[in-house]
Length: 248
Image (cartoon, rainbow, N blue to C red):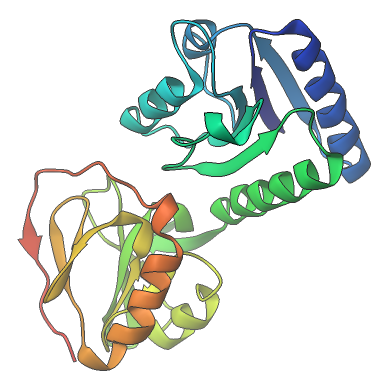
């Protein structure tokens, strides 16, 4: 089920966008739940949804302030801003922001934004099973920091996990599987999730301060993928710095 929140202090707009959302989801045959909020304060007191459609200008807590709070909380809510005119959207960008729409909303433009968001949401639910001892466990692509070649197998390093996961897939196979997602090959032995990259110099620094080598023959393609996904990239860093060797 897709959960969606509409945050606007004008009842007429909330009614209008709710009707548009219902038409969209029912046409697509997608199960959904919509909640309406009259202010940013009210929205932030509830469980965060998959998608937020928020007015930029609201009293006390604006849509921009809501966006910044969600970023600090590392919430994965996808955001579409709405505004009366283009002059109101100078700050309508950032992590998980999918742009803006001008009131009154045009249905075709709304559908394009929603299609993009849903594609990313469904992509985040992709996963692989990795063997651990005598059982298999599910690992979601979105949680993988990087993948490292280990002989004919690979090790998956996952955000928040104390140990790496073993996969029977080769690094070359993973490169093909993850090509359409936010991953890029950076060396003969490594593939990195670019959403977790915080800095690039001689190596690639990730959010937990792990540094992955960047081979010169991979730099051009890696940088293209890195900048293509720049608006989605995570910005919160951890404090367990270490370096991984082996660039080629």
